Image (cartoon, rainbow, N blue to C red):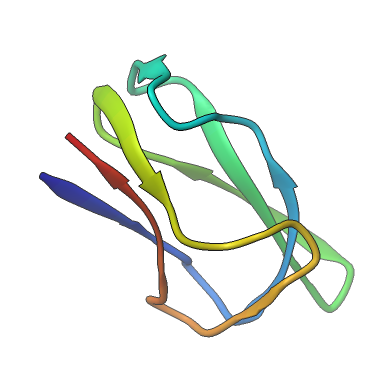
Length: 69
C-alpha cells in the first residue's frame, strides 16, 4: 500500500482519479494549487483504494490524499 501525499499546502483544484481505477506512474492524480501555482501530484502504479480529500479542500504539506494498493 502506498500513500499519495500533497507536495505543498494549498487547495485541491482537481481530482483526476476514482476509487478502483488502475493507474500508472505517468497518470496525474491530483492538482494542488497554492499562490496561483499549480502542482500536479503523481503516484505509484496500482489501484486507487481510497481518496481522502475532496475538490476545493484545503490541505497541508505531506497530507495523505489517497491510498494506492
